[in-house]
Image 1 (cartoon, rainbow, N blue to C red):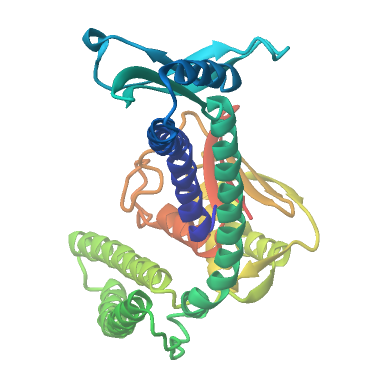
Image 2 (tube, rainbow, N blue to C red):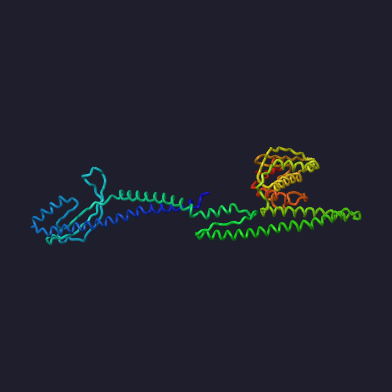
Length: 428
């Protein structure tokens, strides 16, 4: 996981680096063009000034030729030569490279050249002037160094500003995040977001206020429904069951009537159990259980085994126990006891008479295995009201309740079939 600023800064720096790298040849082209333009202007001025000075010397033709010859010797980068009227052409500007014979290094120098026809004593002369241009690789190197320097400055400055600004700009967001982390629907403590002058954060807080308000209202409605359903449904179910129990004790019932009443009683008992389990699932979904207890898991497990001892004996099931001492977990003791009971009862119900059950508990894993003949379908295992066997005495919600309790405690439950044994393991 990376902070938001890191995710936005990295693409920005990559973009800046690409732009600066592209700018190097652009800078070179611009600088070189400006430099050539300045040299062209410089050469033009030199040519015109030289011609002007020679015209104002008032030399004879012979003295002028001697002066031009001397000029060509003492000015190695210029040349003035007499041309005929037919050779007069337009000005020529160009760039070329040449080796300098007086430099030991074998490298070429760039020159900006101008060939211009001037008139001295009203006679045409071809004036050629060459001016050295800055080396291209040196220009590129300097521009690259400057670009890299400023890129480093941008990176350092951006990281510094991000660190400084993030503590102040993102402070309202982090405060909002901390408030959400501590908010609990069970306690329904009032949540107050900090005031901020940032539009986006203010809109976020406003939306969160509305969302929390709707959730609290929905939670209260669901909780009231759960409580009302628990009270309103259980009471008539209990009354009907009591009436059926009295009816079953009536000596005047025929055998057919007794069987009908017994079937009704079994169906009613199962309906009552399903109702209780559905209400339990609703309470778990609504977070109506506290999970801050420290539970002595091994004590609850021993207690459940003792209570269900009679069921083991009825089916002649052998029980193998490997339970560690002082196994403590955080969570809800009521739900943990339900989980233990459901797993053990599920193992008893699906173990043939004379079979075996193994119960193991360590600091990290609670595991129950029972003998069987074929693996269960993992796709239907934890679905509500799915039928994995022909036994209709259960509610079809036992494993779903176990899974929801594990989710509530942030535990994980798994199933596997090994050596003709169904194995359910809960990673604590």
